[in-house]
Length: 79
Image 1 (spheres, rainbow, N blue to C red):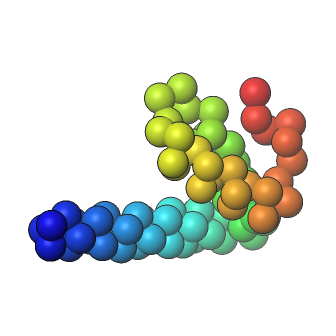
Image 2: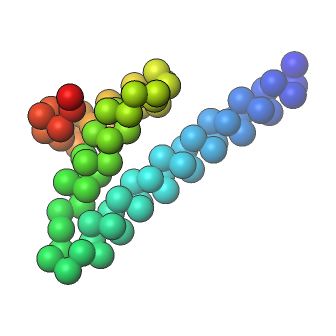
């Protein structure tokens, strides 16, 4: 039982680290453009690509949708 607890804690921690890296990478990508792009737009575009992916798991889709709404992204990006 303790192995399951350790594994679930590690999985949650890995998910948090991955989401932080995803947001950080999107911001760096937007900032790295010569025109000084909008970081929120880059994040919204990335989250839309995650949500539009046909094989995304329901957990990841729910988390991405929550972030999509929190950033105030345009629903037209979703198909």
